[in-house]
Image (cartoon, rainbow, N blue to C red; front, side, top):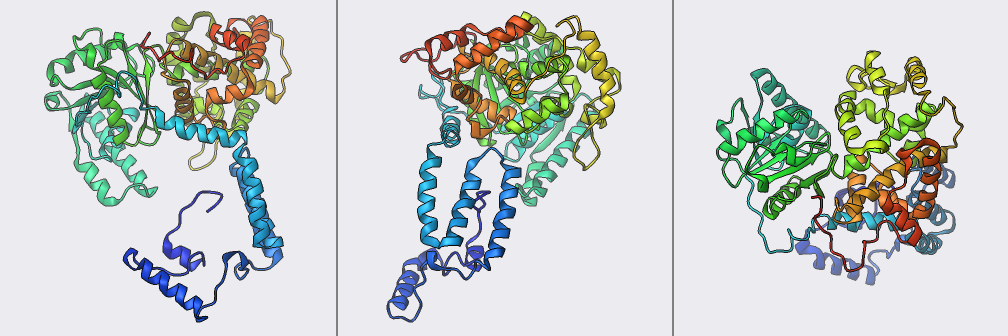
Length: 564
């Protein structure tokens, strides 16, 4: 219960000796009086919890249980001090009595509550609750409209995931596909998603049946006449998206919100051929869409406050955390983290073992390293956005041919079980030694970039060379007002990329490291390796003025909507 914050039922509590009796709420006072009188009249013993030892077992048994719990905590949460602290306090109580345990608990609590981990978790708690406060949207007395029916265009991985999230929240969905085979496949994926939720215990069978009854398949736009929102989730091809938006504008009712799930394409380009710029908005879900908690809401300069408010409300209904961001290449999350994978590729070109890079990043607290992440996401995504990023980010973009070489070698990542890692059904991914010849070829091709000189780096160097360019790009994102506040980027990094919550999010963590230290390191690497590491003007200014990266630009300045 303490290590996993696990809830138990009252019945279990009684069985485990944590509570004395069970009764209905109406009987509570009556039962309490009865117990008090029984104790006062010596008919029941007055046993103080701190004095009880009947459930402890022998000292050797208690020590064995605590030792096992310590190992488990070290494995599950190696970077979180509170788990070991809980066990220290329990051990104190077991060895020296309950009163000693309580004294130790008070001492340890005072130390922990002031720790960086505690401050980070408190920061995330409040930051998550402020993402829906959007100046000019949520403070102008607008009322959200009821969204009863949503059309999802595209039944692939993302479309079916989005449809699943809507259905389990009792929103009717029309799933549109181009042919019966694709439609059937999409419906089958949704059914599979719902079954998965039932297996995990987060959905009952009755609710699953209700969700399936709210789904309707379509091969044309005839069912779009009464929808309140459309979410387009087709492949990242500009002409296709433009033609879809031109079509749905003619058919959907005038109040209907026209949303796209694009992860990179400028929304102004997507809606270029329409006259409905005020209701075009980005609804960027993260895969798998029915499980990942973040919803990036992308607004342009012309998106109406009503459309933004309605999508925020839908986000809450489907149990997502909405973060409103501005319109630019990659928006907030993908733009901030575009250097993440690129930095890892750069390190491999310098001779660093890719599995070591993944290990260092995982030990820091990320769910997986950048290479395993690439395997899981599939190489199609990296190849699709490569030219978009190159065009948008110029000299600070590191061009790597590694993914092309992997694909040429017949590797597709987790999809075909063969990437940087070897994937067997039901088993954990294992490093694939046979990938070395691809790495050798990649290093041979990149020899000319850095003179072919291989380097030796510490784990700390690896961590910093991967994450400091990400912090640098986050500084540009804040400088351009792509996010309303720095803490929104913290939440986006935690919920969208799996950045460790106990480190407070990307910007909070960067401020614990210090802007001047990050700036000095990036400046040094920029001299050796070029513009990929060149510090942004925002980072430079904060380093010189010794101001936290997350502090607002000026005390009075309200967030603006430039570049949005």
